[in-house]
Structure formats: C-alpha cells, structure tokens
Image 1 (cartoon, rainbow, N blue to C red):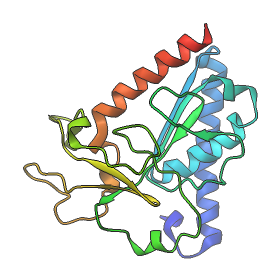
Image 2: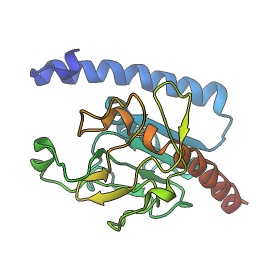
Image 3: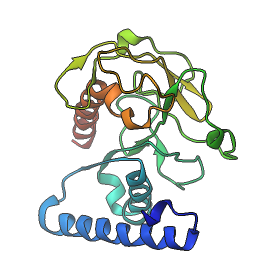
Length: 211
C-alpha cells in the first residue's frame, strides 16, 4: 500500500524493497536455471516499473542484452528517454527490444496522461508496430476473459493515439469493462492470442538469427 501513498519517500522505499526481491530472484534464476539461454521479460502495471529497472541494471549495455528476445513491459508508460540503447520493437519479428502500451476506450485520454510532458512508447499489439494507423478487429486473434475460460476472436480493434492505445469497448457477456474507460486491467487480456503468437514468432526469429 505504501507504494501508492502521497508520501514520495515512503513510496520510493516500498518500491526498493519490492525491487530487491525481484532482483534477488532474477539473480538466483540466472545462476541456477538459465544456463545461458535467451530471455523474455514480461510485466504489467507496477511490475513494469520493476522490469524497467531490471532491464537497465542487467541488460542495457551489458552482455545479457545480446540474449534478450523481447521485453513486454505493459500497463505503465515507458518514455522515449528511459533507456539509452534498448530500443522499442519496430515490427513483429524484431528482437533485443521492448514493447509497451496502455489501453483506453477510443476517444478517452485521462487527465494524468494529458499532464505527461514526455512521449511514451506505444506499440499496437495487432500490428506490432509504432504506427498510428488503425488496426482492424479482424487482426485480433482473440482476447480472453478473466477466468481464461473463453477466447473471443476480433474482440477489439486498436489504434495508437499519442501516449495511449485506443480500442473500442469490447462486447461480451458479463463485461466488467462496460462502466470503464481505462482498460488497464485488460491490457494483456484484450490481445492475449496475438501476444502468444508473437512470443513464438520472436523466439523463432531470435534463434534463426543466432545461427
């Protein structure tokens, strides 16, 4: 809870405590389980803050960057000046790069985004590009509901708009998003099958280029 306090010093301390746990776990993984294999980083929301710091500390300008397939760092802004050499992915097959987006109902930009003074990286997960061209819902291989019990193809279309990703309001029975315009809780769900497919595509691309 301290992470969300108005007291910045308490928030920073809470963040550091949580990050140290993540760092320790990652170091243990590298030492005991990784065996020099390539790596994918995936995060959401507060986890994206930790993932960003992890990427800076362990990957950027370090040998481990050569083993990074992709970082899916979703749900919080990643501003263009955050990394020095780690670049946003430009297409569906690029590796050694990162991806980010925040999902909102089309036409809506919350005040906290309007107040942002920097440009954020926004990837369209239906095209895997940074293009502002709209991507039709028929490119959506399927979103999933919260219980992971149903896949709904064509759930939403998507378009990059300034610092956010716009989508139409998804339609399905029991839709918890009907009363919302901020789709933060569904950043992954709305594009679940596209993400699964893209992970496989990037892994294959990485392995092919490493031969």
